[in-house]
Image 1 (cartoon, rainbow, N blue to C red):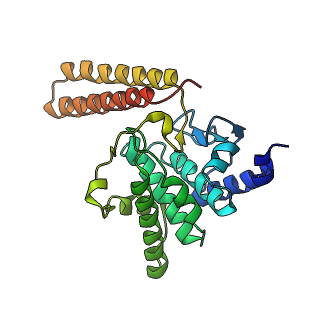
Image 2 (image 1 turned 60 degrees about the vertical axis):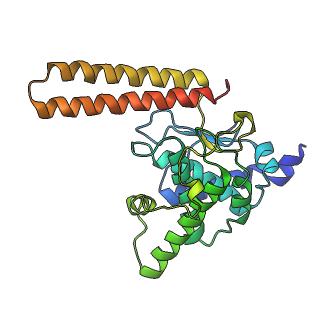
Length: 254
């Protein structure tokens, strides 16, 4: 039997996933062996058709072998699921939000985050993932918010936690940008939504088509308010397409 099977069993993974899904109130979904720890969102408007990926070797190499660290790894992945439909967070910022929610989960449920933080602290910054120091700050901020929630008797709703994330201010000014330092994409240690390069390009093309529809509609609008709205929507879809193209540049074929 492979050494990783001894360290991280199927039961360990399913327990961690179940715990993370329960934290967000999400349906449990299939878990498959993959090239990394990740989530395939499929239809971005639903959560029941998501698929979670597991790679024991990656987890072991990162030193993420405790029950608590596995719970937080899949809290991060389930945060990606919970963010489906929220357009305000993409790219590196979405990754920070997911790390932040892992911190909230740790703080609310007395989960030891040390191993999880140590693993993510090694992340090399890129255009799709923040560097490790910034990710640890996001986790710690989540733990701080969790402490506020408990001491003040606040209901920890998803939207409340998102609102509090908007106040996140890294203590190191060098870490304040969400793009972080661009490193070698092949050296990135990260979690996140898993799509192939071709899938990212296809998503981008769909976004550009939507942008064109709104641009065309804006040209026909008679009311200034309608025209402004449609141009705003066109720009939103164009920016999303650009984001998918950027992600495709740092994604290997799967």
